Image (cartoon, rainbow, N blue to C red; front, side, top):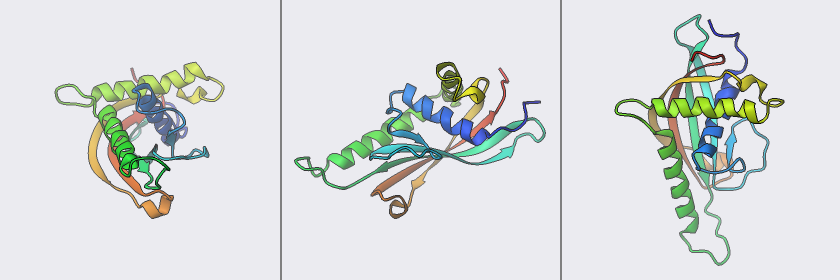
Length: 174
């Protein structure tokens, strides 16, 4: 059985953010966990694990719903093309989705392995702030489609939401 629950949702958020950075989607300045208080400027990506259910029960493994939102603004920058913000937004959407859909012939296991490695690297790079990431494990990763967010609620103009399911645990299952 895995270690007791210790904010697996936060671990998953941070691991997916770190993974997206390692894949070159963006930087720590524009790829943010949902529970950050960092200043936001668009376009950016936010990661939010929204629900976790035991899978199977009493094992410490959880099936977690994950929303990865790409957010953009249509506020025109002086001397920029009228389409420049949309192009930046669409490019970030493509890079984000491509990074989260790395698979083999029938699964997204390479993405799950990459999320695990990126999460554990957080511990190696900053053990004082990421001690809980030492043995985080993303066991599997599934595509659940995409949708649109409510731009008015975020103060931005566009929100594209990519939906995933992660099977993960707080403690090592290698």
